[in-house]
Structure formats: structure tokens, C-alpha cells
Amino acid sequence: MRLQEEHLALSSGMGLAGLAVSNFWDYSSEAFSVFKDEIIASVLKPTPMTAIHHYLYFFQDIEEELDKIYKNVDNLQWTYDFIVRTLDGVNMKTDFPEPDFEGCSDKYHSDCECKRIVEQLIEFVEENQDEIDKKIVHSAFQFVFQDRQFLHDFHLQLAGFIEENIGEIAEKYPDFVTPRGRIKRAYFPKWLTEAVFHRDKGTCSNPECRCDLSHLIRRINIKHIDHIVPLNLFGTNDASNFQLLCETCNTQKGDRSTMTGSVNTPWWNLD
Image (spheres, rainbow, N blue to C red):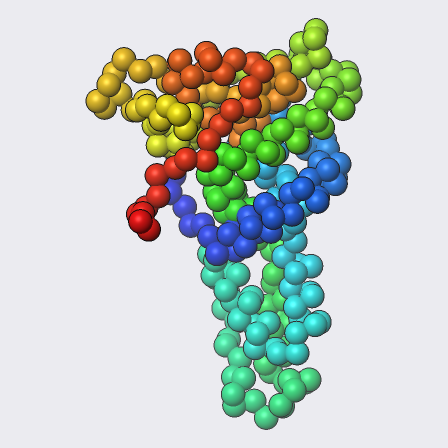
């Protein structure tokens, strides 16, 4: 899979990521239940559509969000601006005219051209809901994937879900479960190893190590792709359950530890 640059709805994605992370402990179990089949299918081997994506979909519904705004916000221009910002964010172009809110003779926009344009835009959003939601979820994932501490918490919670359902998983996907009732280790595709290396900036994720694994200076350090929550602890091969470690730290971590770190290199320091 060749990596390509693309337009990302970062503003909408940031909002969704914040909502999903801040509500994780209250809604993770419900989300895992709602997307049970999809999540199980995504954790057997690394795929671009991860369990995190499905969790984000639990909170993302542009049609419902827009419906609440349109019905509860007594400001038609506010609704229009929200639609325009959202469509611009997901890089969807329309040829609808811009309403003349200031020049409109209908003060409350109960039956005017402004209202008709906004309703046409709402219909456009409803017709393209799947694509809009997909792009916002994809953008939100870019933020969540950078937070190894959240990934740790997410996959630790997911491990409990896997343990509860391992019998069903083994029955449905026998080739992916060990005789001990754990998910089998899977091959790490190149797109995954490159993504983890890029996210972790070629540096060991152990905050007490942080050695360089780029091989630009020290070529003797060996890089390992590590399960944040080990398979032995009912971790999975979900593509968001990996981090970069050096050989020494990975060996010391073993299959009983969920060690990770929140140390990163900021764009600049405040002190």
C-alpha cells in the first residue's frame, strides 16, 4: 500500500477525537458491544480499519449532529456556516448559491430563499453522510493514533472484551486463535511498521530508554515492533496496538507487561 498525501478534515477530526477520548471510560463497553463483529474482525491481523476507527464511528453521525443544530439553534446562518465548514473540511464542493442573510426581508427565515438553500445543503449532507463520516473518522484517527497512553488504555480495555469473547472468536475464526485461547501472532505489513516508526519518530518508546532507532547515527540498535498490550494478556493484532521499541527494551518487556510511554518531542518547549 503506497502512502499518499491527502486532504484531512483536521478541525472536525480533532473535535471527534476529543469527544471519543474524553468519553472513553463511560462508553467503551457500549461501543465494543455495538461494533462487536467489526472489532473482532479488525483485531485478528493488522488492517487499516482498526478497532479505534470503529470506536470513533460510535460517536460520529453528521446527519444526527446537523439535525440537532437545525432544530435547536435559532439561527439559520449558524446552521449554514456549520455545514459550509464541515464540507470544506472534508473537501466536498457544492454549487449551491450563498444565502443573502443580511438582505433577506424574512427576519425569521420561515419561508425564504435562505431557508431553501440551507435545506438543500442539509439534503446534500444526508445524501453524502457515509463519505463525510468516513473522512471525519479517518481524520480523528490521526490524532488518537499519536497518543500511546490512550492506545494503551484502549487496548487494555479491549483485552477484557477479547477475553470475554475468545470462545466465540475461536469458533468463528479457529485459524486465528491458539490452543491456549489467545489471538495468534500475525505478520506485520510494511505500511504498519512504517506508520509506527514515523509516529514514534524512530525512537524507542520506553521513556527510560528513548534510544535512536533510525540507524542514521548508531546502526547497532535493533528496532522491534511491539504489541503494547501483549497477545498473552489478550492483546490483539489490531494495527493501533503497536509501538516502536529497541531490542533490549522489547526483550525486557516480555509478554506480561503493557509498558509504554507518553514522552514525545514537542514542536517547541514552553520552558
